[in-house]
Image (cartoon, rainbow, N blue to C red; front, side, top):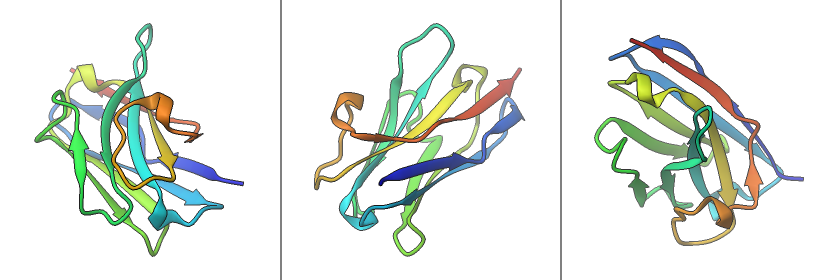
Amino acid sequence: QVQLVESGGGLVQAGGSLRLACAASGLTFSTYVMGWFRQAPGKEREFVGTINGGGSNTYYADSVKGRFTISRDNAKNTVYLQMSSLRPEDTAVYYCAAERTYWVLLDSREYDYWGQGTQVTVSS
């Protein structure tokens, strides 16, 4: 079955950087759109960014545009989220998600597969 496992979370000071990874198994990775979402305590899960199967198209939430970059290595079945200039408001559990489709997806309800999440905490 499809499994997604995130890694790379942790505690970082404001202005710092982190790179999250999401390793996928049980799927033909290049045929899946991958998304990153996050959920802070007491808040709804929100879209962070997405990348299409070939890696040629990405889309980001306005709140992270210019600071976060999504990439993927289809040979390694892994998608990455490079986060820079981190702010305390970026603190959340970060999830990766997968859906077998051509188009990038912004709505969490359109993704069938989810990882368990990884905690990112940004201190001020």
